[in-house]
Length: 294
Image (cartoon, rainbow, N blue to C red; front, side, top):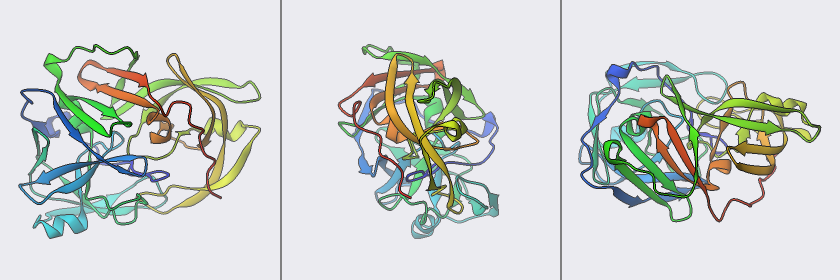
């Protein structure tokens, strides 16, 4: 979901039969993205349009286009309904006819694109759309937050040759989860399945933080829907496999998630077709996790 201390989190329930499809990349495709706060804005073209910037959002279950961008490139909408995002309340989402999204060497065919107003999701820069689960379902996707590089690899030809750790990846209804051990300063420790959300600038968000000895009220839910105030607090550690991020501020959340404040500390390789996530710590690993604004 996109939240921007938060961000673009989402959306529609899709059957596997309606997932977007893409032609295989003949060679690994590397392209450089633009930092959008802590998020990755990837250059794309929709139906041969001018260059647009889509946030790579593993929390989005579907690729979608911002409503103003859709209008500017001539996309028509054919139906609408109400959606529920990271914030309180609902928002309007539309369906459009099929589109082709060009991402580097890849052309991603989206048979049922969604159109949503992303003007107020709170990202640092304008967001023209989201690249979601349909891209990850077909390709191995490697994100290097230090080099601002995105690599797309045909999953049938992928062999991991790095030195990072492999974490089992669970794909539930086009949402991606890994097990994360959360520990509080008072000794309470639990392992939860947490959703991976590269469209959020949050760190770790989980209701365990309500039991932290150090907590405060903070603004949450910036993204789709309306912002609200709820509890944030400090995790003594957030552990992903062999790696631990210490003293991490996090928000309460009924739907536990890891956002880019944690994930940007790694080069991430999402191998969704083989249910694996590879993590390699980078130069951001020891960065302090900032406290939320009040």
